[in-house]
Image (tube, rainbow, N blue to C red; front, side, top):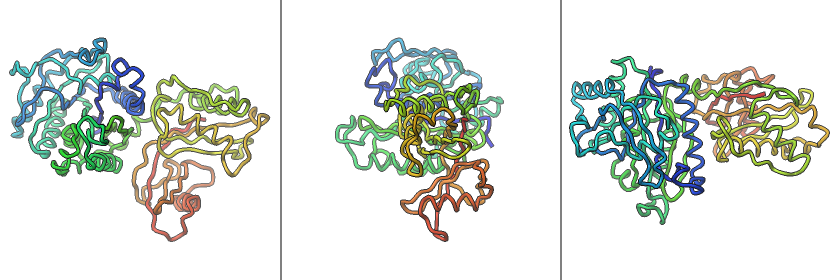
Length: 455
């Protein structure tokens, strides 16, 4: 068990930072929103220290480098944004403990402070970009690590060394694995094009979506080199820090021919806890003190039904600025009046996801006619925000706690959790199969998911 540890896989393109990219940063809205969501999870986790491994921190080929300078600082001045600056305190006790544990384990590691050519105390953009979303104020003590060109197995061992050092000190530690995916996704990519780039990124995303972070240590380095990545070694080090961890992909996108992946890692129970947002008051009927998701859905429906205008939900903040699939359910007199949703995010923000799905639930559910203005006054609304689905066995299902996704070839059926009249996994799976057009007795793949329900 490692519920005292938490992990984040974070991309680091400077253009993603609004002060650097300006309007161009909008292209990476999905990654920015995902990092903000990871930042909210990090704040709820409340680490004693944050360990960051950056591919762009000064390093050497045959050893890991550990920053021990009491204070570290840096800015994005080289990217024309000197105002983006982070000044942080190093957890020097943890840094020293990592060096000691590495020596005990026979893992090559050096003290950056002993080598002036490595510019001790200076933060690079592999640290600055993700941490500008996760902790721009420098609230948490940090330890900056540089990767090496040692085998992947050594990176995994080094991750275990970091975990051992944290346990020795009784530290609650988050590990940020900074790194981008393939730099060769398109013919116009900065590192040139390789068809292996998209294959490599698909492998990464699939591995993490299926909770197999540990498998990355077995990646063919020739394959990784052909893809032109810079994050694999950081990700493998995270796997050593959190062996056997559950993982959730928050976003993946590939603008400009470079892949950007954002994910979180940790114990499943911990991730469920950290991903549960503050919901505020829960209403559901007009005039109630409604939570933000329900209030937004109601405003979107009322505006569209009365004026045929789609509202602009921006600027979104907090939960609504994250990315997630969402279902909007409508009832009148406790009878269903429409329900439309998305299993995975399709919009840059949850706010936009809710607006789209709310209008669809009101006007495009094939089971019902479009909602009329005179139905708005007694309309009950709930919004289910979906957590990342995870593969499961039938024995893992609980219809009160988990929704289910049943798949067979291209057919896919979903049923939300905690529905009236659905009391057993058998009922839940049977209904989801009927919705997908899957016959009884067909071989199916099961996934389960949690939701945060707003009424």
